[in-house]
Length: 390
Image 1 (spheres, helix red, strand yellow):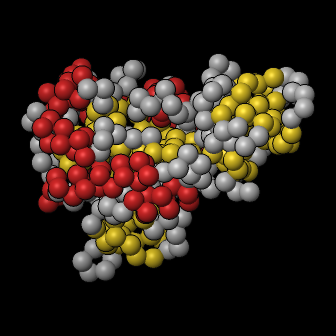
Image 2 (tube, rainbow, N blue to C red; image 1 turned 120 degrees about the vertical axis):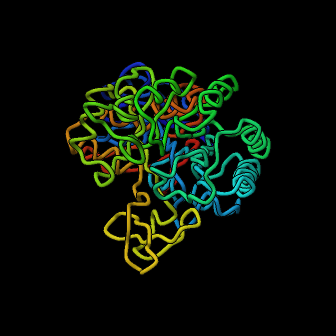
């Protein structure tokens, strides 16, 4: 390894976005930013570009023809390498609604993949595990398998956490399910985020879960009781609880840009989390796949459930990359480039309580960064100070 400096037009740093200058990388960690070029080190010129922390995807089910529930450490590694090449340097593999036993096996495989990685692994780091299900309602089950829906159970969670080696950082549930508030309180005491999703809760039920410890809303607008002037629902609760975080799928298909703007304007960009909710077919050609045990069809940049008669049904998930989502937010003029980058780095890391390790460029941290061209297309990605596209 060596010491070098990145030269660019802008650097998105924790305290401010610095104009011009140089960011030093010492071996595999960040050094400091300086206005003048450091003496005696290689300068890598990214004039015209904006440098931000490596992107952090806190809700993603798979990529590159692999699902997080394949129970195969090698598939987790391949997804990680493919994600890094597309700008994501940390991800939280997200499970589906499956049997208690299968969710446990998936957690074990993710933990095994993480344990076996060498220090110089060239892929996105595993920042934790997100359990999307099985504590949901049939009313908004979406692409989750309704066969395995159960009520929130702390003992069941503890069993999964043991298999995960303590890596579970977020767990989703429908706020109206029996025992939901007790579950939120228990996981909050354990330092684990609870997120409200796939829920038909009324506004007051959602607020009760927030008051008990829930701090996040799963893919806002999608899979939840929507905003109505006589019942604000889950979406209304997401908009009116300023200290919570609201995920948003920023592909323009799950949620149109105008609705994304309404959420960002209501909540503030500082608490809106860009996610992909990407499925197994992300990074793959159009065709038929299996996601969460259910058949899906990927066509026109979107995944749909496949009906028994062979037709396509409701939306199952996205094939978005987080870097493309950042560009979308800027192109739609909803936020600035700096804000969009923060909404895909430090804010998701904070929302999942992994910001002590991910989401910011700080001296001494692993040198994971994403470099965008002026038009917000992806230029390069560095993991541990090494370009993954070199």
